[in-house]
Image (cartoon, rainbow, N blue to C red; front, side):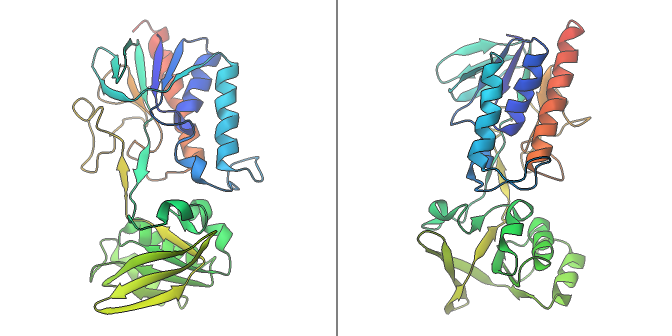
Length: 297
C-alpha cells in the first residue's frame, strides 16, 4: 500500500482524495464512522462556496468522492504504528510506504445528562463554527482558557447576552482578554461556578448552575463548552513527538519527526481548528506524501 491514512474525518478524506487523484494506492482506516466531529454540525455556513450544508451531508459527499475514485475504507480500530510503517489494528496488520495521521480529537465534555442529545441543538463545542446561529440570543461559554475567553469576546458581538462560566477563582487564559471581557456590557462573568444540568428536550432551554452553596436556573439558548480537547494520540505517542497536551508537533505543518509519516487535521498542534483548515491540512499532507513516494523513499 502506498499510503495508509488513519482517520476518515474531513482531513483524512481530503488527503485520500488528493492521493487517489495522483494514482496512489490508498487505504483509509477508521474506528468509528466517516466524517469525524463535523457530522455533529447541523449547519455549515462558513465553508467557501457552500451556502448551507449539514455536517452529515458534507461528510457523505466527501466520502462518496473518495469511494468513486476507488478509495478503500476499512472500519477497524488502529492500535499502533511503527517506524517501518506497519499499522496494527484490532484485526490485522497492514504495511504502507507512508502514513498520514488524521485521527482528530475528542472535545472534552462536561459529562452531564442530555449533553450528547443536545449537541447541535443548543450545545456546541465551537463558537466560530456555530456562533452565527445565536444572533441576538442568550448564550453561555464554559471554560477559563484562552479559547473560552476569546470566544466569549467573539460571541459578544453576535449574541445579546453572554455568560462566561468557570469553576475557579481565576482564569487560566490571557489577563488582557479578561480585561476586554470586563469592558463588555453584555458579558457576565460567573467565577467559582459550575454547570450542574443542561435542560431541554428537542433543544436547550436552560441550564442549572451552582455558585458556592447557591443554585439557580438560567434560561439559555446556547452553551459553548470550551474546556479543551483530547487528541486521539494513544496509537502514536510512543513514536511521534507531541506537545504537553498530546498534539502532534509538526514541522512545515505536516511533517512529523519520523520520515514518511505525516499529520493533518485537529490532531496536530495549530492555532485554528476549523473545517476549512482540516481539509487544507489533508491536501498538504497528501501532496507531501506523494512527493515522498515519488522521490523513491
